[in-house]
Length: 333
Image (cartoon, rainbow, N blue to C red; front, side, top):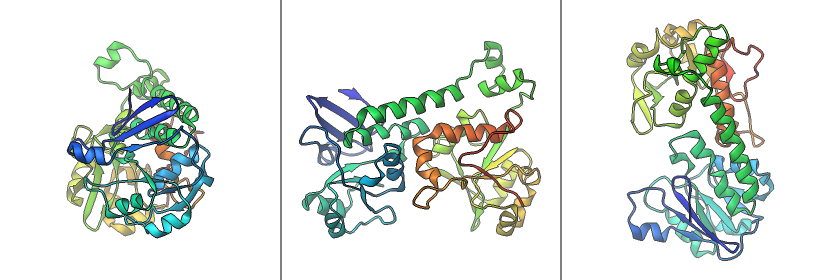
C-alpha cells in the first residue's frame, strides 16, 4: 500500500486497484467504508466522465482528456441524475463539501454510475492540491503521464522555493529569494503583500493555512496573517484592513477588477493604500480557459509553480523586467 495525498490511498495489484476516500478525520468508520470506491476490473481509460467542479476540468485537460467530459455539473450542487445517466457518463468525479453525502450521490449510485470523490480543495498546500492529478491519472488509465506531470510541477515549484543561501542569511531571517536578490545587487528587503478588497463591508484575506497563504509564504513575502491558523479566509472590516495594510503592503494581489478606477469606485478608501498609490496592484484574471472561465482555477490548480513564479515577479519586478505574467494582470488606470 502506498501512502498518498490527504484523503486517498491506493492498493494496486495485478492491474487492479482499490481506492479509498477519507476526506475528513471526523467521519466514522462506517461512513468512511460506505464512501470508499473500488475498481472492479483492470485499470483502463474511461472514455466518458462527468465533472462537478471546474478544477476537475483542469486536471483532465492537463492529461489531454478534455474530450472525455460529456457533462459539466460545476454550476450546481445538485446535478440532475437523469441527465447524468442520459449523458452516457460511466464515471463521475464528485466534489463534497461536508460530512454527509448528498442525496443525489446515492441516487446516482443506484442508477449504476460510479462515483469518485475529489477533495483537492481541502489540501493545505498548492503541491498537495496539484498531486490530485495522480488520482485522475489512475482513474483514467494514464497513471504514468499523471505522475510525470506532477513530478515536473513539484521539481519546478521546489526550485523556486529552495534557492540556496548561506546559514548567516538564514539566521538573519532572509528568505531564499531575498538572498538571490541581494546577490544580484537589488535590495534584500522582502516585500510585504496584501490580498483581496472590501466587498459589502467585509474584506476577506487568506490565513496562513490556505492555498494563497502558502503561496505567499513560499514566495518569501512578508504577510500579516502568515502565522494565522484560521480555517479559510479571515473576515476583516475595512477599518482593520486599513490598519493592517494601508501603509505597509508593497504589493496588492487578488483584486477582482481590471482597473484602478473600478477599485476606486468600489470604495474610495481603496486609494488610501500604498500599493494603490504606487501602482502595484494585480488581479488573477490574465488567463482564460478554453471554456471561457478563469484558468487560475483550472490550469492554475495543476500548475501552482506558474502562480508562484508570477508572485515572485510581482514582489521583485526588477529581477526580470521582461517577465510575462501567466495568471496575474497588472491593474492600471
